[in-house]
Length: 187
Image (cartoon, rainbow, N blue to C red; front, side, top):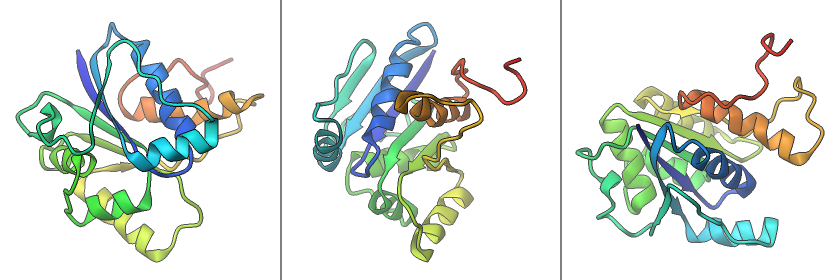
């Protein structure tokens, strides 16, 4: 049974984090728990973008971003995957340079040091050289960078369909079969 951390930070694209959470909690037969950290900026941006608040259901449990006593803040925990979706460039920069000043950055540091899966979903455009170098540093440290770049070959018809092209890819990277479009396999 998997234990997954989902961090939602203050980048535009909170719909990706919301959709990812909704999809993960449907998988109670494969996932034991989903620990959720939502930064204050993420809550503000989500409210601006969706006129709603995050709703956690089922196996999802929220932790405060200042709670260094959360189980996944330690390498002795059994959390195997962390997904930061969306990831702000500020959070990416702090993780890349070892500044563990909150639960999101500490948990990411734990994932890297323990050689566990860390998937970072930046939602920024365009990138500058600092962004690229920070992402390079994280890739070299073992993280997976999965930009929130939707695909179109599944012929998405709605915004939700388009969002699922990214969320499905994130889930695949986390070794979870999203049951979504796969190139050459949906004939």
